[in-house]
Image 1 (cartoon, rainbow, N blue to C red):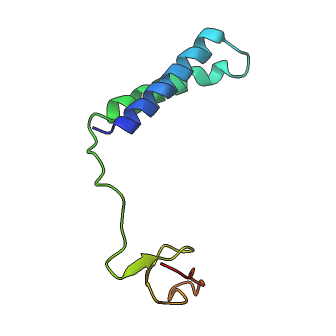
Image 2 (tube, rainbow, N blue to C red; image 1 turned 90 degrees about the vertical axis):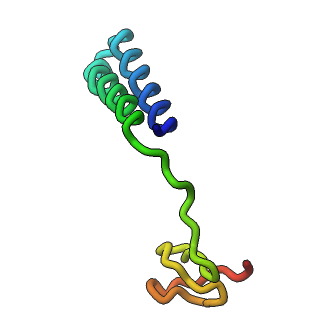
Amino acid sequence: MRPQLLVGGLLVAVLGALLFVVQLPFLYFWSLPLALGGGVMALASFFMSEGEGPVTAPPGYRFCVFCTNPVPIGAERCSRCNGLQPRGE
């Protein structure tokens, strides 16, 4: 189960229900798609597995700040995008 998707889906469904109740002229059209879409999001959250956590670079590497390619820690530039890497670390 993905709790973030469940909470997001519930918030979208509540927004859709609120727009349905208030019946503002231009926003009333979006009330049913938002309510149904939020319900689908909340329902789908029960069938999706939880993520494995943050992605980390391999040992001795860090991610390029421009293209997210793994770059050796001592490298001055990225081999893929030629982006200048920050000093430190």
